[in-house]
Amino acid sequence: MSVPGPSSPDGALTRPPYCLEAGEPTPGLSDTSPDEGLIEDLTIEDKAVEQLAEGLLSHYLPDLQRSKQALQELTQNQVVLLDTLEQEISKFKECHSMLDINALFAEAKHYHAKLVNIRKEMLMLHEKTSKLKKRALKLQQKRQKEELEREQQREKEFEREKQLTARPAKRT
Image (cartoon, rainbow, N blue to C red; front, side, top):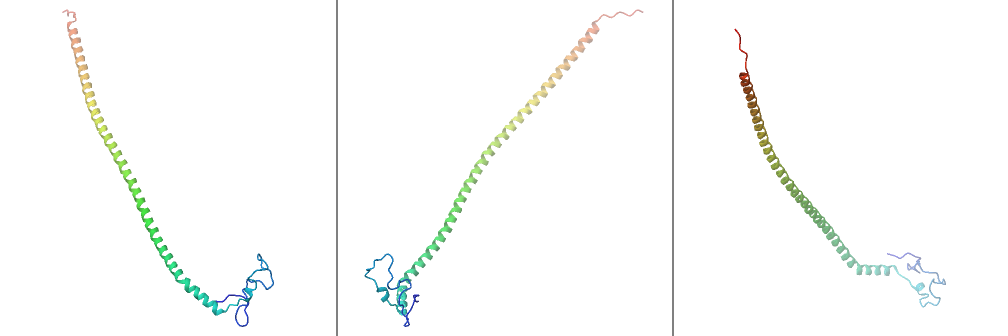
């Protein structure tokens, strides 16, 4: 791994690419900076850069790998938790649907009781109408009988009056 920038013939960098040329004022810094000229004197060898990079990686890589593993475990646990949550939600929905079904059964029971009561009332009304029809038929038959008796009584009275009526005698 190497840092880009102008390099000297011996392979060492003369200065980083982001450094200013000698004699250029540094923006935001005073001209009497104690670090002035240090950047120009700094030379970095490729081998040193690689060793520093390897040291940095060897120092932080195990922690990063453990962090990566921990994140993977957390992600897997999160997936498991999401699946469990979905299952619980479906169970909750089933419970609500069971409550709805129970409510429907209660309502069906209520309406069934109403139907049974209506049927009882209809049977009772049917019996009453049957009794009333029988009674009406008996009354009609009784009136017809009474009227027939009155008619017969009138005929008897008419016959009797006819017989009681004076008739002229026949002359011979």
